[in-house]
Length: 55
Ligand SMILES: [Zn+2]
Image (cartoon, rainbow, N blue to C red; front, side):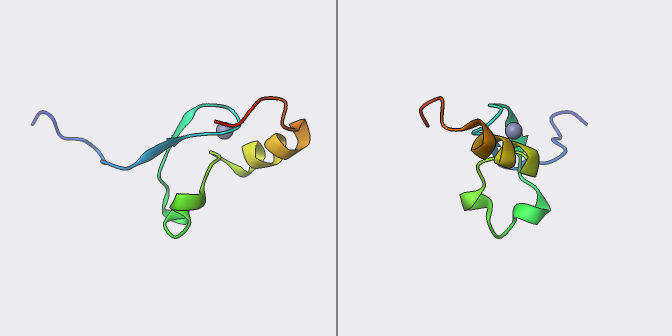
């Protein structure tokens, strides 16, 4: 079988590290608010400060 995707999940770009990340079950209810790929990036963002402008 060809063209069978493992999962057609939505993706976003992390506002901290800039890497794309895929929808996770833990974000099912807050996906619209998720901006970071992990808690580490979320924390890092705050620690590093807003050196760069947000997109
Ligand atoms: Zn990240």
